[in-house]
Length: 159
Image (cartoon, rainbow, N blue to C red; front, top):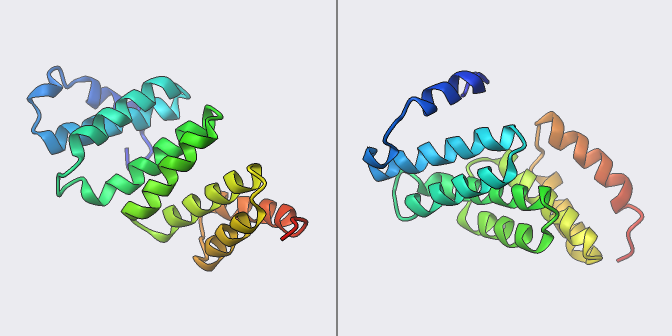
């Protein structure tokens, strides 16, 4: 999966016949990975179920503590795909509070919160999240592009 071979990763994950026999932290990662693959295939309902299953198993596990924030961020992104802004905001706020693994994930979370706040017409909060995003100086091309697009909109916001 790290090499971008999702089909190969899916083939390996599908070869696991009895996931209940995996120890709890590994089973949690198993379901999270299956959720990531479902998300890449635009199967958002399955992805959400699998991600929730992985998060439920992983809570409290030392192996999962570093990835809990990232999983919550992904759940927020899923909710945004479904246009459920209230749920997305809840998940992304939880992700920020739990901690995200790196500045790129933090920037993505802040940028999504900026977008949500702009949609809610809470311009001061949107600008605050935008400042936090820019302060992280993300380098991921997609995030940099989204920042450029959002900057045009932010400058016209009142407040």
